[in-house]
Every structure is written in C-alpha cells, then in structure tokens.
Image (cartoon, rainbow, N blue to C red; front, side, top):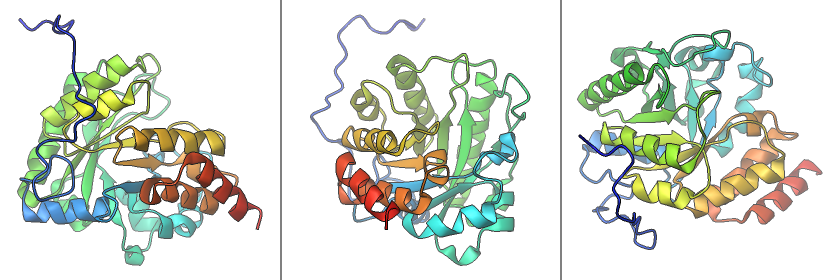
Length: 293
C-alpha cells in the first residue's frame, strides 16, 4: 500500500533546473502531443513569452448575476484587446461576446449546484465534445475537487473530458477547486496540481500559495494562477508578479480585473507583468498612470 504520508527521504524539486523534456515545442510537457493540439496551445500561450493572460468570467454558471458581471455584453468587450484567452461558459460567449474577437477560448464544460448549495463538489460534464468543437474551444475547463466529498466524480469528469478532447485535439484544463472547508496550503496544492496532470490534464489552474516554486517545479504541465477574491490593485499585481517569478505560465483573473477601479488599466498592468517581465511596482505605477489620465 502506498505511503500516504510521503516517502521518508527528503524531497528534491530541482528548482534550479529547467523542465527536462522540453523538446522542440515551447509549452511545458506538450512536445509530444498532436499538431492540432499544439495549434490550440499556441493560441493560449503566446509564442513570444510562452505565457498567457486569461480573463475568467464564467462565475455565473453557479453564482448567477455576480457583482461586476451583471452585464457581460458591457463589461467584457473593453478589456478583450489586452488578454489572450476568454474563460467562459458557452452561453456567456454565444450571447454576449463577438466571435470576431479572435481570442482563444477556455470553455467551461463542468457544472453542478448553485452557490445556494453548501457542497459544490458534485459536478457533471454539461457540455458535449461536439459542442466544444462547434464553439472552437482552445481548451476545455473542468473543475476538480481534491479532498471534497465529490472528489471521485470530479476526477472521473476530468478523465472523460481528457479522453474526449484527445479525439479532436482539444486540450483539457484541470481547475483546482478550493471549498470553504478545504485547506489552502502548499501541501494541498502540491497534491492537487500533481494528480491532475497525472490523469491527463494539459494545463492546471490553481491558486498562489507559499512554496509556489516547488509546486510549479513538480507539475509537468503549465500552471495558470487563479486571481481569486478581489484584492487591492497593488496586492493583486504583487501576487501576479510573484506567481510568474516562481514558475507560473500565466494568470486567469476575473474579479481582480472586472471589479477593479479601472478594469482597462488593470488588465494592461497584468499584461505587462505576464508578457513584458515588468515588476509589480512598475505595473502598479503604469496602472495609476492610466487610471489618472
């Protein structure tokens, strides 16, 4: 039986060494996937920087009309030019976003209970692979609940989505869920971010935490950091900067952009960190400059 407490020898994450199996393709761990999947990954991660800025506005699939996203058709278009990927539901995209935007799509395919339910972990797959193809999805996003009551079912959802996506060259992004009763420690995130790629996820979305450089080193696919709850702009940019400096391949921000004092200025500041190697201080000064113009 496996030792659930881990091996007794000291762990070595080789943080000082780059990922070994890079091959001829710039997206971590993806050198051996099919050409079609590589084209989709190239639409998610910019070839120049190897990074991505995702805009998450899929909150309505369980929160309804959430603060700041009452009107997707009004709030989202002004910031589209400064992001790489739209992370949304098929309904949100079809009704509110122009198909001429030219942006990659991270399509939310899992769904479950509303926020009125105390346990959100019992999700199902709510979008068929055929509709993901019709939506021209660049990747499919599946919520996974490690350590929650619905863990087994959510991992089954992930595996079935990976299998379906492989038939059509569509990557799967495993989204690490953190419920109210779930720990937010590096130990938990090391577990969750390793389980998902082991089961076939091509991208992992998770939260920033202590010892994040060990988490990114141990994950064999790109990690995209969730923005999480709304923070003051300077704190959100510092979190973004630290995550990128410690091995993240990008960020997927929602509330920290569309609830910002100036969403257009904020998304440009995030873009500076992710794609232009700006520091958090430089990005915040840029945000203030745009906001006060």
